[in-house]
Image (cartoon, rainbow, N blue to C red; front, side, top):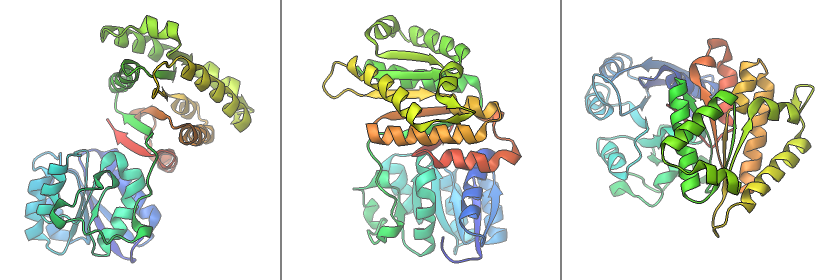
Length: 334
């Protein structure tokens, strides 16, 4: 992290994400002081009052959107550097952000791996565009002089993403989309979920006019009970790596054999770690995320993990929450 005694204003209307950004920075350096704002008008007022060194700014804000807020902040606190952290990912939006004078832009789903690199670069007085925007120069906004040590590492084409949801409805909708997309592409999907969620997902997939019965018959849709599967992989409430790799390897190999197309692959989604966390087995939950991340990278897989946010975001569990995020290549909030 850049020099000590850095003041940062974190602006986002979703409190858990604000806390994630603030805690990530404060964990990286004892010299970071963070303030927070939940809407665009509050951001402008606090920027004028506090004159922070850095402002992490969302675009989709109530009362005053992030672009308009950036215009006003440029006048109210001209020395503050703005780093946009937004769900918007179009090159046109990023171009506009830099045109307004932003020093950096990253997408929220990439924040877990790119935030600290972006902050380092921006605080040193260089501009930063997230790795997904490689190839865009944004009319010179991204000056290409980023030190190699400050640039985010390239990830593999596959992703190990964690999504936090505010309700079961959001969880089920996004999981059904993930499964539907994979199966329609001719790929195979492994689902690890509770019995009630497995049943609900099946109904939602059928409502999408997806021929789930054929996918099951072909072996391209494998749905497993989370509790039973986890108990088979644990010894004294701890995961045995060899047992996990053997079981998962055989499972993925079986699913892969069912994929007929040349460039097809296997995807997986589940809630094994959230179930463990709910049972008070936080270390086991983190260990499972680590093992899945290791496996996904070595087997070039897409893996989606889902947590219903309200169940897990109690204040005394913030550190565990950060450790969960750290085991993923992307983090998003729904």
